Length: 236
Image 1 (cartoon, one colour):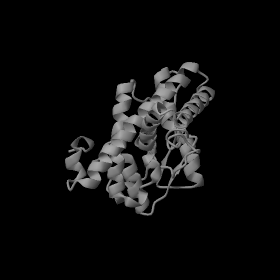
Image 2 (cartoon, one colour):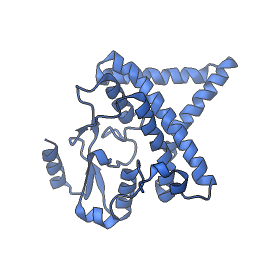
Image 3 (tube, helix red, strand yellow):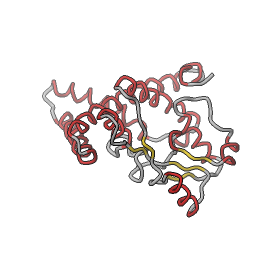
Image 4 (cartoon, rainbow, N blue to C red):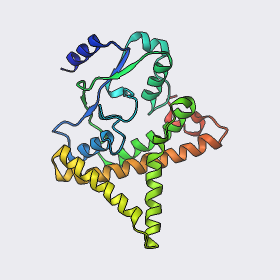
């Protein structure tokens, strides 16, 4: 079915690079379904991995990416950064004049990290590589990449304000988590997954947000190259 959908789409409109959305198989654990929700929802990542509802230009991800030999050779293939190798490749493809597109029907069941610790490590690295990509490709930097960090700092501020009997900021967070719960419940039709989705989004925002802040500081205020500052984010 996947190859059929890809063939139909590329026949109608050929591009040199394409991708499809994530999906969660019914056999996935509740934690995996919650993590999938956090990584695909318009309420968390802006839908960049979830399909048509994305608020940003679609960037194919390596777990579900097709690329022509011509485009791959033109850009020199993957770089040494990891994670972040797929957006780096996609941006370089754009810079060479090639288009990319989402094929909504070409989904894959993306079995993500199986526990919270591994998920935190993954999203923390995602946050750390983004400032590096912004430095390499300045035209791709967006304010939305700051949102997880702003969310975390805002929550800390809300707790401080609560001690001063200013409750509105914290109420806004409660409303947000309520929306996450309801949206996940509707989509997954599972109360446990809906509750776990709140945990998944908190881990996602904390991991990504503070990874982003740490990397942004060193990338902007150190004279060292990213490869020297963060060797674990690069292949030798």
